[in-house]
Length: 178
Image (cartoon, rainbow, N blue to C red; front, side, top):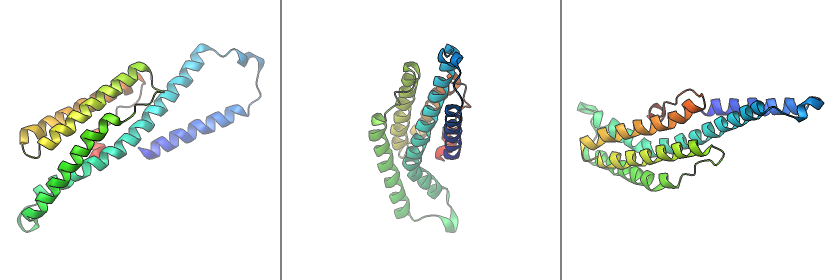
């Protein structure tokens, strides 16, 4: 994802530098409204992708302890972890989930996005927060763990609705945090 964002940013920068060195023609003074809208759309796409890249980095940090705990539970036989280690992994996952629940509401949605897209992103972040609340509860109750996955899917769907409006490829955020 970072490579894609870097390549996209480099392409936009190269395009803008290349365009600025062209000789200006008198007809370009009155730029068509369609061209301006297209540039704004690209800027909004880049803003969204940069925001998502930062968000995914943050989510990987929150999610890593849950992944470690799940991996510890799967080990059996001689590879099985001692209960003390599992308890530590579980405590780490709980602390990470609680941190996510506390920090997600303070994530700033870029103001460069349209109002409609800002609202959709805010709604997706609310689903994400609920997902981590359920994930923490899921450490004790398997039904809550399933609910956490469903809420995360809701987060993904809401964020992908913005992708659809901007004609971007849908993100696979669940795979990003695994």
